[in-house]
Amino acid sequence: MSEPLVVLVADDDDDILLLVTTRLRRDGFTVIQARDGDEALDVALERRPAIAVLDIGMPGLDGLDVVRAIRADDATKDMRVILLTAKAQESDVRRGFEAGADAYVKKPFSPADLSARVKELAGS
Image (cartoon, rainbow, N blue to C red; front, side, top):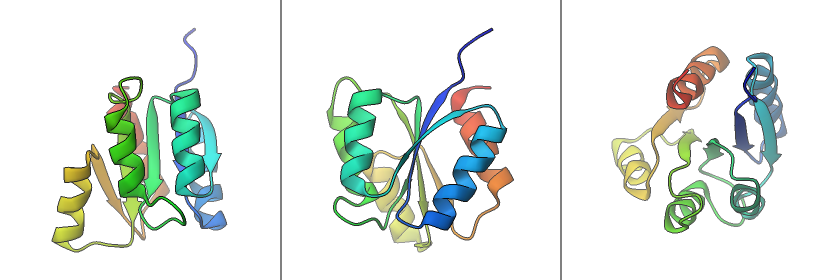
């Protein structure tokens, strides 16, 4: 049996962090949590999860800064990244993809849809 895929979930909203973590764990993923952008980047570089789900609006480094840093590091440049945000304007979405995101999920979101997106990026 293969090891569960490791997913980093970073959000400064404890309710969203709990909701996403609970759903992904229920779906068989190993989840590492971070509560701000600096912690998310540290975890990403140290633990090298397969996928990162990042809120854009976090204290310290925001989600876009974290994506750029992940893409700039040879050890993490291939990590799959989903941006999670309430910013739904087309220009915000474009900035997310330009920063290097693989997918963009707008708040409010369905936990089932987010989990499906994680599975899709995981190739499962």
